[in-house]
Amino acid sequence: MKFLALFSLIAPLASAAVIPDKVVTYDGYRVVRIATHGRGEAIERRLKTLNAVQYNFDTQERIEIAIAPEDLGKFEKMDLEYEVLDEDLGASIAEEGGFSPISASRQIFSSLDDLTSTGFPDSSWFNAYHTFAEHQQWLVDVQTGLPQNSELFEVGRSFEDKPINGIHLWGKGGKDSKPAVLWHGTVHAREWISAMVVEYLTYGLITGYNSNNTQVQKILDSYDFYILPVVNPDGFVYTQTTNRLWRKNRQKHPSNSCVGTDINRNWNFKWDTPGGSSTNPCDETFRGLGAGNTPENTALTKHAEALAANKGIKAYIDWHSFSQLILLPYGYDCNRQVDNYEKQMSLAQGVATAIAGASSAKTRFKPGATCPSLYKAVGGSTDWMQDVGKAEISWCIELRPSGGFGGSGFVLPANQIKPSGEEMWQGMLHLLTTM
Image 1 (spheres, rainbow, N blue to C red):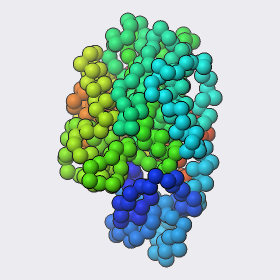
Image 2 (cartoon, rainbow, N blue to C red):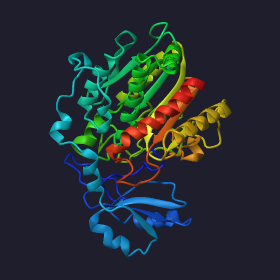
Image 3 (spheres, rainbow, N blue to C red):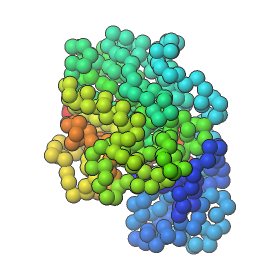
Image 4 (tube, one colour):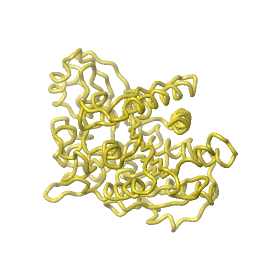
């Protein structure tokens, strides 16, 4: 998601080209941060002549952009004030630990029932990123750590008929007996760190419960957790086979050759509010031809409706990257606050404090409403969960990094997985014991 996630990935800024089904390379792309000094719109117009990837649309102070090697000379002639964040985006992607198209696409299981556990995983899982098939196996393996208090589930299928898998955890009282905590990861396909952090938190709940950690036991005895690490499996696989920076799902559209809908602009709440999404199928924030018309959104909505109708949704978090933000509703209206704004902000500030104290790095997360803190975004999950799903807490958390360093920002080195997970674990312990 992020304040910077509305852009065309491989086409010039001014165009909306069809994404080819061949491996996209970012070799030689240079990532820069341009100081705009309040002239963001004028500078953007100049940059539209380049073959580039723009990261942010809040351009009052800066523009972060990855420029194709053939246009670096043209960029230099613009004589703009800038700093280099990454000399070679392609090299950063390689360093992150990519996958061959064959390894990333094979052995995707139609159902988790087709898998047999290989044993409870250890923490080395968080040393690297993984394919979708490996994430499926991990769910099967980690479920064996709490077999009497957990189950695997599938909320539905993607456009390409891949399963949208999750794990349900509970404590005393039996399953479905307590208010729900619902987590979604990787709705935007390129945000790999979100799946890993969601799984880190899942791992912490299971190992903490088994080790008689009284804090964790109280949490699991109080809430039913419904955890879906990858809710956009088609797009996620595509980032590992074809285009590392793909954002949307892989839905095809009648009478248009451009592919994909932004699932997080497709929720059936204020979906057609002007601004905050695109009606162009070629754009990164294309909202779809109708509200809730993606199969992924249909499945996620049906699941959330069932939770809301049962014991209710205590807390919903949609995990994204990047920019280190804790975002409350609303995205569709910059002048409206949620009814329990003070409570949600107090909790978010407490989470931010817990995160900052989790390590010597003192990572800073900033709480605020999606709009105006970030930008206007309509058809988003947090707005739907707040007003339709009646969640008491409904957040989007934007994970590391704070800006476009070390590649594109979406390309976070694997050595950042564990620190990201640990700081979020401390943040969630605060939230889940105080909300």
